[in-house]
Amino acid sequence: MAERADALPKRVVDAPSRRPKDFLTASQIARFCQVDLKTIHNWAGRGRISHFRTPGRHLRFRRPHVLDFLRKYGYPIPHELTEERPRVAVLLDAAALKDVILEALRSTFEVLDYSDAVDALLRIGERPPDAVVLGAKVGRLSAAEIIGALKRSDSTQHIRAVLFSSADSDKEEALEAGASAHVRVSDVRGLRDTLEALMGVGR
Image 1 (cartoon, rainbow, N blue to C red):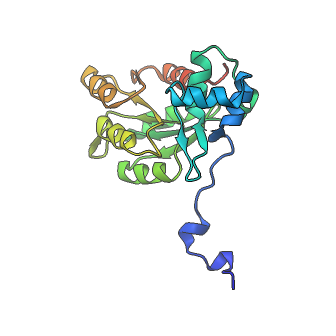
Image 2 (cartoon, rainbow, N blue to C red; image 1 turned 135 degrees about the vertical axis):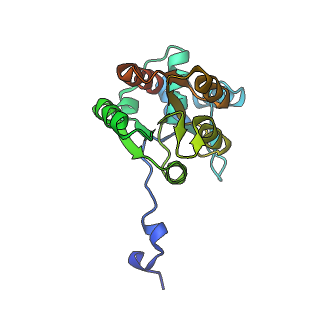
């Protein structure tokens, strides 16, 4: 007899649903680029576009990688990739600064607010955002440590990490760990512009 949904373990019932545009198929990319399916397989095989394979060996592409590819090779960004707001996680200790950032980002992005670094890493693993904004330190962990942890996991290595800090030493460590960008704390508008550029918003 089949189990009722409400009798299943809570973690299964509450498992986060992924947005339809988080993962794209080879057929969708072929349509975006107006090429045949074989061309997409060739591009993937040559490493021109980041991808992964499902257990059934089907090609899948993450939304940020598709946007990177389309911009790099001059293809127009299709409306279906921009109609949903990109998801951005914010990991900052400074409450006053965080409030300003959240206010600046909410009009463009779906914002996830975290203050505990370990809790954030667990939740980000369950529900990966498109980008994460980090302070130089979040709790006991440095930005470089958090970025390193994200880059070591297949499910989170695609996430764009933006360091929001004024110290050049923090900048170098974060970039070496795999950060996509660094923005000084005094430049909240620059942070929004940087995230928009990384996510292909309005392009």
